[in-house]
Image (cartoon, rainbow, N blue to C red; front, side):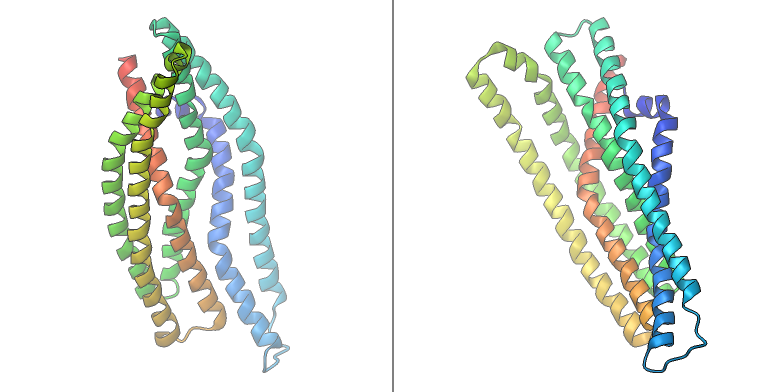
Length: 290
């Protein structure tokens, strides 16, 4: 069973959870704009030059509504994901064991495959919402920045290209390491059944090298992306403060979107590692089905 098979089989349940994830993400992306407007209204109403004609109640209500949408999406996402994905794993593990038995695979490999199937659930439960957040934050923040200054948005677009190249290099180098890990883990139960302490010791140490190499690539990926983003952030601050002379609320919104853009890249190494692992596992299961 591949990840595509699981998504097709449980598409309605997965779409339900993802709809709450999207509600949470989209409301979070647009929230800085409304808070920036509220901030400007509060400054104009209660600032050094008090202007009683300025209405701050409506901006406050708009911001509170968007904030509560974010809270609602986050609450429902967390409420349903546990139940939905626990059921999906139970069904998936059963299917994997049933099919493996029909193929006549050894019992040790059957249970190992059932354990490996957890990677599908980790991807759907944890990584898929992170992918959704990554896309929402990256493209949502970039689109929002276009409404403030196209040059700021252009800087964000420019950095997406090298990030994509770096992640592609990361993926190509990690896929072989993930294959080595899965090969080792498929022997897990057979080695444990043997009771050979030396074999068990070797089993765990065989996983150290590929995991260390994956961590090395992950840290390099993280380092290069963060250094690139530092230059983007400096350029954005210069444009926002020195060139455009934005209001306090607009500067707050712009900085919030930039931080959102930057923070979303924190997920990239983990996402790429999990995606590579799931692809390799799906390829393994597909080859076996053939």
